[in-house]
Length: 73
Image (tube, rainbow, N blue to C red; front, side, top):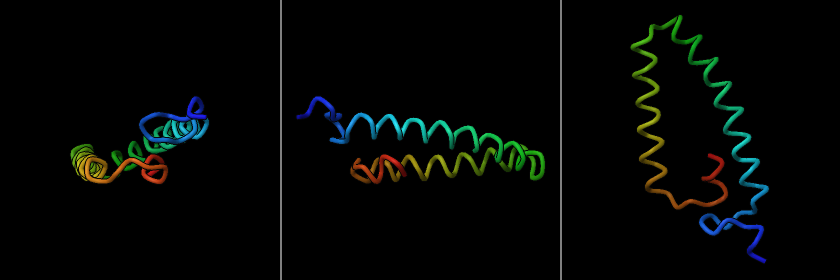
């Protein structure tokens, strides 16, 4: 029964694979968006914004239990 599920998140491996695919798509889209913003706002401002967003995300992920919803968030 558990062979198709991850031992850490208890989600099906197909769901985890879909999550990885979604992360890849958003990564590609994000690169295009941040590149455009970097041209308009300046590199230092955009890198600072990215750092703040990453810091908030890392703190949130360390405090919230890893479940299906937070895996995709």
